[in-house]
Image (cartoon, rainbow, N blue to C red; front, side, top):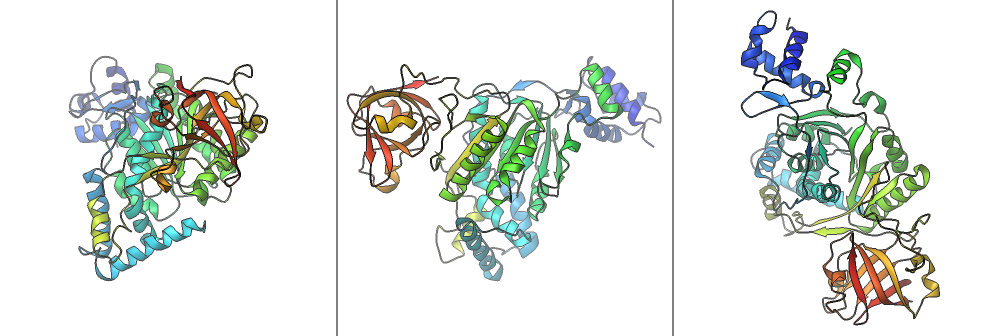
Length: 489
């Protein structure tokens, strides 16, 4: 029987002295276990001991790293694409994209799209999970890093990192998170996935690094005993780690992901509230949904309900710029990023069908919300009644020029409809009851920031004209040659 305690004791002693080499310490352990056995025990104990394994096979204390922003993937990594296609070949054969199997997968993707559009529940069997992965692995991979960048730009993504991924699906967000973090990051990753998608997730987890420690919980978030996942974990090992400072962090999860799952839960508000109990005091809940109206507005509704019931703070993007105010408009808001290259498995399935382009999915468009218990906000600025008009009071200001603060909450919406129309952007200040859209009728050097600023930027407007749009039942904020727009924060 392996002397696990002896291996731990040697590791705890040596880690403050020099890298821990299994080829060395096996000689000091009772029974002289093989170095491979020692290495496996150290891998299993790495989280409690706060160790990471280096490329040379030695173990060192996990570095505390502040992750830098700058995520901009151009393609879904080939090693992940190859691993996923292995599943398709294993299930359907080398010509999985042709014949009956190809027809079945294309029909599965069509049904998935239709059911999501109509907000009907989806049952994930093996075929549906593979179809879902075929269509969504690349864009979900890309999305998660863009959202994490909003936290990283303020130094709020740190390792070691504890992650709870609710509704982990086939693993797109997991792979994006894995590649977002440094190779030396110590990660305690827990996936919650009750469906057959967990089989795909399990397979793709084999492609992650040696310091990405994963546990898959094949149950629903409603049924999961979240308290049992408290990273304190209890027991002698944790007590020892706490005594010598090697434990990999404080209690709670640093990051909880709800990626493309809220619209599928029976009670998404309750699910988010439940996980808030296991979020670290300086942690974050990140919720992401597709950009379409139904799922994006569902996300915003959940965000607002959770804020109202728990008092948790919205970190981004829909900042409440007026203390005590909450928005009540439709809330359809989403970010748009550069397309991701179409992977070979999508191209093969698409080319073998009769509808070119239907089964490729290069677009990266998503709605998101980041919530934090500690009240931290992406931009720590608030409107001032003495200087700024409030959107909730716009009925008083129609046909007047005003100054205000607002968050940019869309790309150019007019470009989607008519390339020749004036650029149009959704904006909000957290008090709006109906939609507010900034219309750039004349771009100047003083207002060009409106068009150029990224999604989620807080902007100050001076001398903007308020009009009511009867056709859209919304306010238009006219940005012309008189208006000044600046970035805030």
